[in-house]
Length: 219
Image 1 (cartoon, helix red, strand yellow):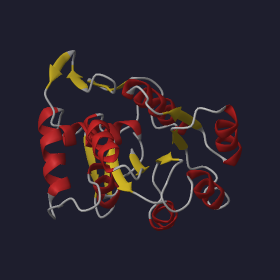
Image 2 (spheres, rainbow, N blue to C red):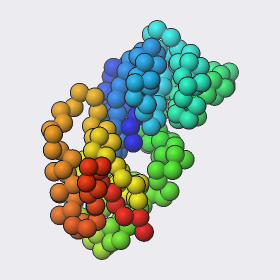
Image 3 (cartoon, rainbow, N blue to C red):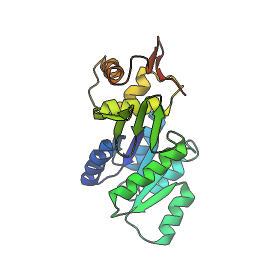
């Protein structure tokens, strides 16, 4: 799940990115409204977290500009304003939800999970396919009921494949799931992660669709 965070306060931006990455989100950051508008046209994120108080144009104006082209992009507004009219204006401009600063990080994560479920990427907190159960909230994987240790990126990759079981995901799609802008990606990183996942699950759990990508069989 890829998030575009639009926040001009660098301390908040850096802190949120670290926390959300621990929750297995891939987070890319911009600090102005125009950068946000440009970025969604280049590479559409799964979710946008948008601060209203930006240095160039307001988050409300960003929403008004992107909504006609991207009506299905979920947008969560962050606002320091506590007046009802500001919240109403944001929702009327196309926001899906909002949080008033300062906010509780657990509430932010909970609201992102709600959006995730609405997008259809997850139906429940746990996904079970064959003997493999992945608990999204606890960041745990068990096989035949026994907990197995996975690295953060292994977990993210397994989650992406399991929540879209039956679909083939290309190497490029999986790279976007695991890496943000500017992160170094070795040419065989996906292959290495897939190899490690097969060792921990089973050789047949993840199929290679030659020349296309990888898939987990849907039950």
